Length: 427
Image 1 (cartoon, one colour):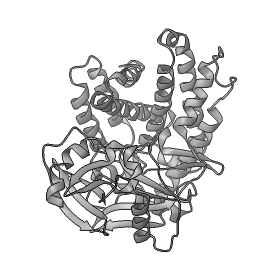
Image 2 (spheres, helix red, strand yellow):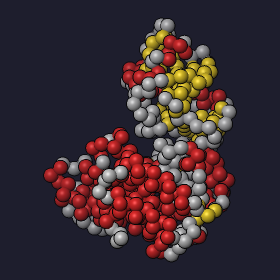
Image 3 (spheres, rainbow, N blue to C red):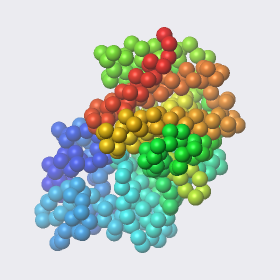
Image 4 (cartoon, one colour):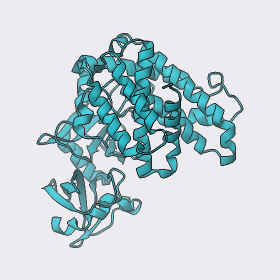
């Protein structure tokens, strides 16, 4: 069976949202395990990167869920149809029972919308997240949520069961946060309300998001204090951070007119007092937080998937997370603006900037109000803003690289942010 599937895997991988890149030139099966009569587990190497596949088999009929998802199909081998097993309710239940045998469930549905993993929801009570890109070592999403749960931090879904093979993390079962809405959707709703009227000041307009941004800042501050308690603090490797930032700038910004000024903005971090370092979220934005009746919850501690696992697990400045969320406010304002007819966008530009600034300030106010956060910062207020500008710029440059590779028509969003960040500071 494996030999028959092998030539089908490059095309199948290229059609998956969680696969990074175009169709691979070479795919090899590194490990294989038959987990049941119809369920196969594969670890494959695709041009040097390892991915996890769960493949189901149907012998006589084409399952209904396959009809509505062509990308789920791997292909036909020896008369059997092979497909993504996580979309098969029966096979998903079998997998959950292996990981959490005490859990009895009846209803199964894919979560959808994910970029780098695959999650299945059971009875709107449990969620099984299957990691697709596999690295050696503990996955931070398991490591960090477990540690935060031990500190008593209440704003994460701590693991119920984990799935490992050797030292690699394959998946995790967590409580499902029913009734929650992610921060990105809530922000877009606020912006659509704003753009639908003539009101300029979002603090007095309908659908204001400022109070939620402040609460989110509170939760972020509490998270960072808890992370410092769980993993400790140390002196930051400022030169190491700058080296990573500058390498990214070399890849994306080389030859662009703003490159010299961007280097100056990043280099100012060298002049700051010693910067504390600690474990952080690493890929913090509105899509990684969920608002429920119980408040905000933080999701997905894997860090930026495009960066090496060792780099994502290294202590960093908490301002990396702060910058990520601030950049997300700017992205939300820009994306909601793009939804408007082109002839209306100039009219709403002032509203977009006012909304972004309002929520930026509210978030920072909520964050800095948390006891213990000041101890995690660098220097005084002005020095914090200088460091934050560097982390914001680094994030915007990362975004530019992502958009160039995946969504070229969105490039203007990070480019506009980079221009503001480099022109807003004097030489």
